[in-house]
Length: 285
Image 1 (spheres, rainbow, N blue to C red):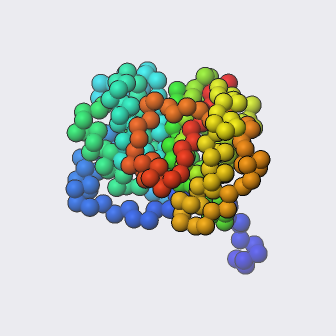
Image 2 (image 1 turned 120 degrees about the horizontal axis):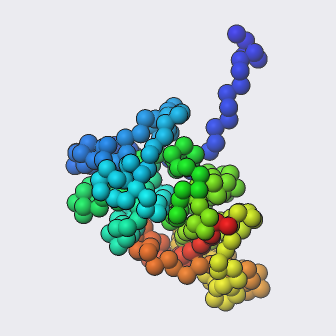
Image 3 (image 1 turned 180 degrees about the vertical axis):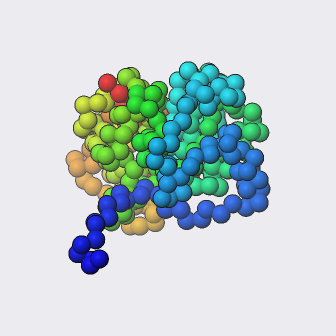
């Protein structure tokens, strides 16, 4: 078959992650093996080991009730859980709710699974999968009570921004997964990603911002970042602050800090570097 007559391969979407090191040290491997099929979901994968095999589904009510949690409880999904500081804290505080932690890096997933066992948290499952695959293939439409994305990879270089997770196609997936009145909570420490999140989600009629107009002007963290060029400063670069009139964020819409979001090591490093934290909350209409 000539090259011209070969069927065209479908274009792959840019992945929002790169697995830099995915090997498990012995203690994490033991944690992984012990939790697989219990706290750690054992999902058959497709072409990539972070994808979900076509046709595979999960009965979430049965999945949680196996270990004593109420399968009918509200379900929260956190994307990019890392070692699980935020979701484990929430699960301990709210045992009447169910949680799914989505973490693509095996060491983080193994560490979280071990923590769940150690703290006897039966209302959390861990999926070591691509978040897009999870929303597309494992989450029934309208079944989520909350969706969390805290500090996703900012891909702050201009040439890499196409890899950012929160883009219009992903907003479609979030809108499908969340039930009516469901909350989408986001946080980032990079101002231009915060603006992108605010813009692409606000543009959708599926979502409303309950904090529209709040924390604008001088009270806006965006004004503070632009006026001092804090993002460049945090990278050790010479700042190029904007004139005050250009730095002023007249739109606002930033949410107060979600009280259920604990300060993780990652967030503390961002604060120590001088960056500001941007919180956003959107409700599914």
